[in-house]
Length: 477
Image (cartoon, rainbow, N blue to C red; front, top):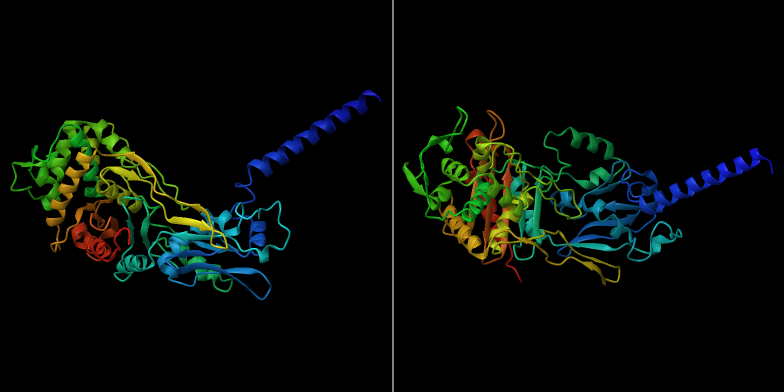
């Protein structure tokens, strides 16, 4: 064998080795990136040959498969499609997958649960249905939450959950869409264009993905930081109508430029009940930025949750100086939260300071209804001591009694009215919980709802939150 042949043989062996390594990496370690990519056309050909499992909630079938005239399986969403679409998602030949249809694709197709993976498929998968996904969502509460927003023409979100477990009972988002129109080939293209042209962004899950300034509901977190810094509900704070931000010529004011509790000096309890901006700016300046940063992190601001759905992290933002600290303490400047994070915040107070991991999927079951996997309550951290949680709960009771529309209920709450642009109508918030039922709720209505620039959280969002708490089933039932 001459030198040229030997060199060619060595090069060929090296190239073969490189190809084998590359094949192993792609097939063994990058399947999620390539084979399971929601835009992979081959994936959809395979999916059409599989009897995909159902997505169910409270006995209602939300997503199911049926066989068409070409012997392919298609997807349908038979019950309350608008109410559930941002959570359930869709499976479309043209536009991929979304929502839980995407996040739980492997379970729904049976991969991993019944030995039905893409390396072992025989072509007879039609006889082997995929696994079903059962949700924690309550269909009646979900329908109510969606209707409370949609019937008023509001853009926003509602999240209701059990503080003691993290189970999400309702997750409504408006505007919404009909997933049946997205998956139907006759209507898909026109529907897709219409949804993408809608400035309200119906394809977004506003409850988990949209990060908005929280306004005064963030004072729950500022209060937690203050308690750890030596403040008490009886600590004296300013009740003046405005306060100048250090190092600037800018003054922050209370709502409507009003004094708090008659002006002068008031207690932190009064400032919380009346949502006095100036008092919380002063409190933050007195305690410094580090306690606020820690409290925000303890409550999950800046953290994403694994729901099988896209989620946004929210942010406290940078706090380079005292002026920025004052703005951040009242939930403005760069502070953002999602409705899910707001519900977790209220739930943490209700659950004696323990922050539970939220979840929307209860369990995954085989076609014979045996359980493959079940989500169980999981504590993330202790954001508050029991004493701190009891103190904030008491302050939230006082806030509810001071909120417009209070009717003698036993809820603990906080409202928020968040500015987000010069001249723009504010986003309005309401977070609350009912200890007797073990239910917490967060409501955000964007751009003032139907009240425009004069809107407040107490006027717009609070009635929705109270309706949810009133209708929610008690824990353990």
